[in-house]
Image (cartoon, rainbow over the protein chains, first blue to last red):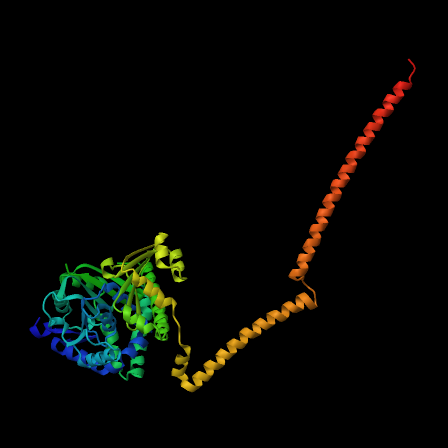
Length: 251
Length: 235
């Protein structure tokens, strides 16, 4: 295998070079940023709010905690975390995409969130924070788009305080064959059409469906988290395994 | 991995809780007294442990309302006050029995900042929702005021009409149609019945006495006739 062949990765069902993936993902999110929340509600029929709610319940965040919300996008989790950590705590909303970060910052400011939130444009693979600095890290629907997932998980484990939790909320593999069939029909036929109709961007939503299929399943991700140095890794299937919430603790 | 049952159990309470949280915060947003109370409570966390059904609920107060979270993983250190209560105690507490009384009766166990509990109850039970200003937001101040006035007038009229109807019906039933006896008539009837009862008792006693006397006289007469007839016999 030549070095050039080795350095390719998937972008949905396409094979692209490693350097190219980040910019292609960035293009996708630049184009959907403005309508991101509306599309989330439409695509998941509002269930994404419940998934995020469960993530917050599992996070065990308390007043005074430092929380990092990676790929926080439009700041759904950050909004709640900032209330939970209070004025003594801190929430960092990190996203690799400037457009998403702008949308998120505007939305949070409109909701009266200020003092305890910081905005950082950062790549999850090399987080610009010192070791052992966060009590909780969440990445909701973001890991899928990271080029080197193992590096990202290692980086997260590094900045997590001992005893801190990493929560990964991500699309996964449904365990029921009937549900899988219905889900495939929905995401490959209906979803791009909704994307075309609402956000005027069919390609981005086709990428979304494809990238979900390429993402590691529950057990694989669990293994990856353990390899990255997290312990007591467990996962919970939500909505029949369409989404899984993984939680690992740094000991 | 968790089983499917557990998963479905996860999503349904989350949905219920999300619904409760939304409703509660929407109501709080319409109560003019709530912002000041929430301001005082902001940042506090109250952990409620229900025995039956087994449930741990974390109430996190912030300026905009309350976050309701299920707190399976949370330890007590994260909460300012912890309440353990039974469903009966919960209903008594919500219906207004004071926390101190429930604690003395041993139905409620509270640790931490106990006054948090009293403020929470105040916040939730003294909800005085300002419907008129909510209407004003949708319709404008003047139409909202006339509509609210109209509704209030209708409510007053309704109450008065109800009272009048009750009075009319009772008058008709008791006085005009005499379908049912009134209280006074019933009492008179009861007195008469008591008199009658006493009279019959007396009569019964008199009859018994007469009967007794009669049987006594009969037996005496028989004895006499027997002695008479034996005296007439020649020896």
